[in-house]
Image 1 (cartoon, each protein chain N blue to C red):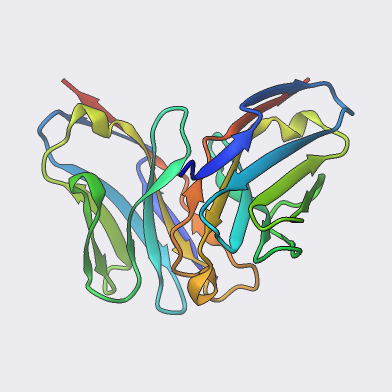
Image 2 (spheres, rainbow over the protein chains, first blue to last red; image 1 turned 90 degrees about the vertical axis):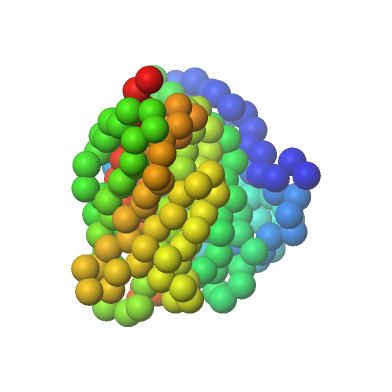
Length: 116
Length: 115
């Protein structure tokens, strides 16, 4: 099993450009998450999904959109990139038992995004 | 509101020495607690978790943590550090009281292991 994969690994954007980050998991997990990791700020949840066709806002959703059209994929979109969105983005997935509260989250390797 | 505090953003130990990484939590409900590790340029992976069963939890790579309700702590220990333990360690608590289904993360502790 590949686990959780993320595409691309690195990307440089100019302010105002758009892009989509792709996350794929092959563990048949119900729940999927998008985080951003910034120095001194830990991990912050952007959006999450508790099943195919559903999405919900996390702690820092502004400037991002997501879609979960297929159970195995979770897409994160930046419509108009800003320098404040320079970060490392992690996707994670979990089984979804007990409402996700005791789940182990499985993380992808991350996407390093720089917005100039 | 639930929260997690990791004491010490950087910890340095000698190879073979005891590793102790501190995590204190605040929670109005019985907590579910986690420790994750992040090796350089990688994603996070679970070390261990406490979900209200045994208070001493054993994880991967020789790590363990003890849930102490009276001290609101969930410190991570390993008897003998190895060079391969150098990484970033994150403590987290599951947000049982909130609307958003999320983990509340500490800011992380960077562990350096000196030869």
